[in-house]
Length: 198
Image (cartoon, rainbow, N blue to C red; front, side, top):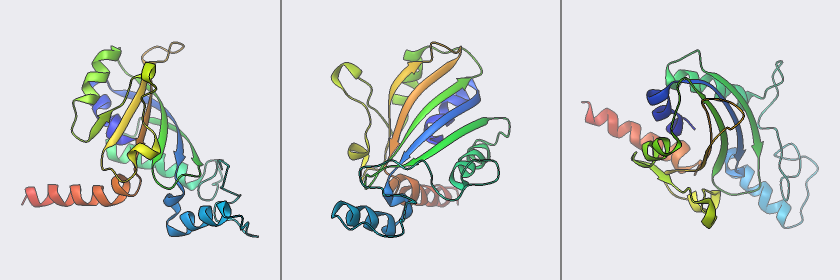
C-alpha cells in the first residue's frame, strides 16, 4: 500500500486513507496454505486456522480483535503507515479480509489528498516509478489480480478513478505478492540500499 501512497503523499499530501485488504492465505504462512488445501480436499477441521472455513469463503478477521473493534492486523496498518510516511496526522481506516488465494494481497484504497489532482497526472506519476506496474484498462478488463502478481516483485496498480462524491479523493486498487514484495524483496531492497550507502 505504502509503495503507491508515498509518491501521492509527496505530490499532493494525504489526509486520510480508507483501505480494505483482501489477503492471501500465505499471509498466515505454511499453516495458512495447508489449511486451504485441506479444506479444498474436503477435510474440514474442528478448529479453523483462519477462524472459519477459508475455502470458498472470505473471512473479515486477520489476527485477534482489540478493544477498539479493529484487529491487530488493522492497527498494524494504521501504525506502520504513519511510521513509514513519518506523518502521524494521516488517518487510516482499515478493514482486513482473508481470501482463499495462495499468493497476492489486494487492497482497495480510497485516498483523500490535500490538494486537487488530475487523474491522468496521477496515472503517469505512478506508471513512471520503478517497481510499479500499471494495469489500468477497464475496457479490456485489465487490472491487477493476485494471480498476475504471484511470484513477482512489482506492485501492480489499477482501477484509478476519482471519487465523485468526495473532493480531492482518489480510488485505486493495488496488488502485490505478499511473500515476494511484503517480505523477501523488501529485505533485499533494504540491504541493497544499506550497501549502497556504505
